[in-house]
Image (tube, rainbow, N blue to C red; front, side, top):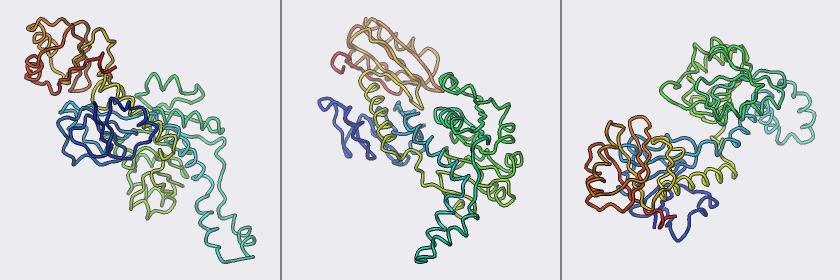
Length: 393
């Protein structure tokens, strides 16, 4: 019986995928095999020795101590693309909000409460101060062409915009999904210089933190609208404030408000609603549960942020799943332990990601506890699991 602990509310449609005869699901339990989370802050948690996996129902993993998990052989999954449509729709909403002065207009109308019969006249007399512009024929620059960036780019084309994109690390899958009408930017600076709207879709890393700064604002058109539904730290707030005052940035729409932004004019701050749809929560929960089940039951890894994708077709009933550092001769040392017990290897897979790796080994018979302990004693091995695939299928 596997034990899965929920650290946040998870959509029931996802939880229903756990077979009740094989899984115990709860919010409090001892020795859980996996955590299911959304935004719960894990960084100060003591990780139980039993923990094998963390499933994040969403894309961001800033709330998870990924490095600590990696060192303990705990696989951290996220669900890239599961909430992509929800975020895309909010980005398109942001483009329109940035163009038409809708938010100031609504606030003005709300200020007319109590004006009784004068309301229609006041609306007609003052609506001109909320005039905006149309997006058709304007140029949208999309920085980052992952799942969401591609969907934003393609939908913006459907709305009559010209679209240019920039992503030096675009995947084959994303390239296949991107409309051929999206023009390729020659470089980062070329994209921001030619765009009326700029939509950011890059992860927050040491390389992207504050990447939209005074130097970049200097290359932008006056009156540019910037959409940030990626991560807050990508834009330098101090430089943004100056760019707004200088007339470079006409509107900044973000899903990541902070106190500095709330004091700036021409900023539309949305309370992190990108993935807040019923459909997105179901999609994320479903994907996270499937990934946890695959790993716990078969050792398959897909969409892990800290270990490589691994899938080995079953060749016997007994499988070893070994998490270890990515060092030379690891497979040889494991094989030597098995050979000492006269255990035949029927199939195996070894893949690495950064400084860590996963070895999946199908064997002809169940290794003794002595053999398992011997594998654990190999320097750089951090986790050893023995799966009975017949029992757990």
